[in-house]
Length: 372
Image 1 (cartoon, helix red, strand yellow):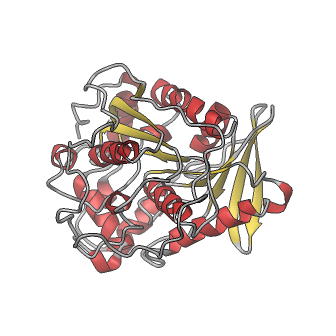
Image 2 (spheres, one colour; image 1 turned 60 degrees about the vertical axis):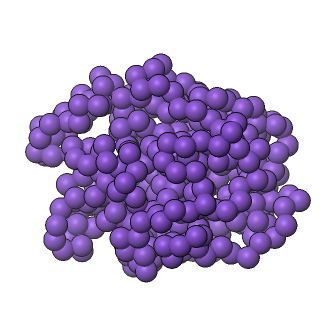
């Protein structure tokens, strides 16, 4: 099994080549296979690489509980400011407090913020919006002080992959006044729309990758069960590759990593304040897709929390991350957008690489400004 030729980062490529040599495939085997969903889900959930790392002299971890919802708090030992309520990845169908343990530790160390990871319910046993409701429950627990562990005046949301989708959706709830206010949303390689095979990033990334277009469609069908196979049908937002005036632009392919069109996050900016309370959105402009499952379809984004968005260039989700950054920026929302060249989806959860560490260092200043 070969590794996708667009993966040019040497450390990331070497990691994938080792996986391919050992298993005969890269990690998309279960998602791209045809056959029994139960067996494929079980394979995803039985992942020996998901471990809780030992605490060190930089980060300590504490277990917590919010009325039966398991949480894990990662706290910088040298002091911290702000707390990010975090949703792990796993396509909404796999993952737990261990599968993003290393990423949570690295995120807390880079930003100087606490990271409160949430063991939300998984699909297909608990489809949309169960995971989102659990994340909101954790945010409300944090807004009440989390038993003295959290300063409720300095809250944000964060998530990786499917967890980035949950964080973006929760930020929409906060914007509408239906969830506690937040100061920042950190979206790491997020899912932001229903799968669209016509999107350029979907067409370019169909095999030999940790996440493929086919795999994303399978995940989506298990999560949003009444919209299996749903494809965007012209929502009233910019199409693939389009940008509204003032939107963030992407870095040229192969360019040096780093923020793109960074906009400073103003101190004290909090979403949910002064924005009229709205009813829960159900869908936008056709397709029957709930906006809270596909935040890119939200008809209005002004008043959202300042955003930090990371995209991997070799990822079916790359285009929608850039589009969302563009729409937020065009709506007057401060955005820090980083598109890392030569890496695939999941690069942030591979064993520590310069790519992961450099991206987290690039986004850390925006998070620190949000909690200033």
